[in-house]
Image (cartoon, rainbow, N blue to C red; front, side, top):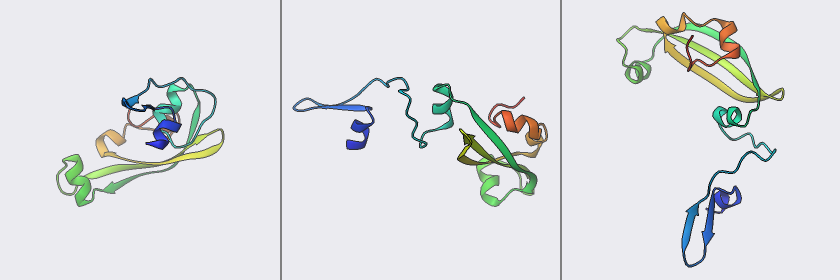
Length: 117
């Protein structure tokens, strides 16, 4: 609770309780522990380096999670996202191969696999 209070996400009022505060606008300090959506909402630019794009056979857990038949192929995309030239996150996306075949390396460097062209 102390961490949430220090981040300004909650306020404590003795005798009354703990309350969620309104999120404050970005104040100029970035802690690299948020999500990509946080960076975008703050208007901060990131860049992406595509490490690998490969067709792989789906594992049994992949088949279950994606509701695919046995023997299905996936497109596995590995990327590093940078903020101010520093690595921010390592991203591995696995898509049904029919969707993955529509994604170029160029698109993956500027876009998101979550927003297919």
